Length: 364
Image (cartoon, rainbow, N blue to C red):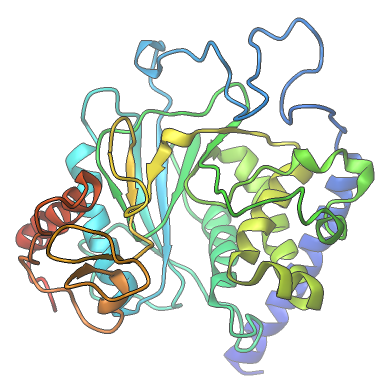
């Protein structure tokens, strides 16, 4: 039997085991009503904001006794597009790792190309196998949960918590461990709307598990969650993602955010709730100030005229869009935005420029 056939048989065997595991977990998991992850009794030590689900007496992370370190994990392919983003991200991770209030521990790029690349010496990397050809059905994001399953099973992770991040995240200040009391800490996305799509989600989150509000409006990133919780969530996240992709209604409804919904459902199936932390990150150009945020997520293009006015939907006289560099390295010393462009965009370009100026052998 060839190596390819052997791996495929091994994968199918493993997947069947995971599905069986998930059925057993779901059947035996205690059901919780109300805010997911919280005790329902009146003796709970803090109250909950019903709008953003933030404990109102949340303590300052810097005042906690002893650090609760988290490991930052980023999934990526070996494309130029993902690679330059990872190099920039890791540069800033190192800058802030040991800063005030930081509880940032180790860092891993989970490379799901199935083979090492030439940046293994620069960025701590775990090589994961991609899904077998055709299984992702053209939706390459399905490799993310599969890569996390492999990493969590095989890697020696020292920290008790995991921050799941993405290549297009730039850390702008030291990050404390924002999770607490068994809850994850996650950024709420306005376009993840479980209530609106309840009829579709009920195929994957049955009514006996509780109200659809148990499914938080999050993706898998950025999320800080306990390592042991993530070990339970990850296989379910993988299986729900595959099941959603195979379901025509779910596939059409969720599109490119399908895997985000799958993580939210998997987290709820394992009764792991999340503090919805709006100050986790900003997304230029819509968010204009950095303020207390920890991450810049540069998923959207930034287009402006020379008067500093946003021309979104139209290529601007000045622009920064990561997609401009999907097959080539961004050059060093990108031009700065014109006067009047918001702080968030200016800071983003300056931070990319600083990283590229200091990373050896940039562009190769």
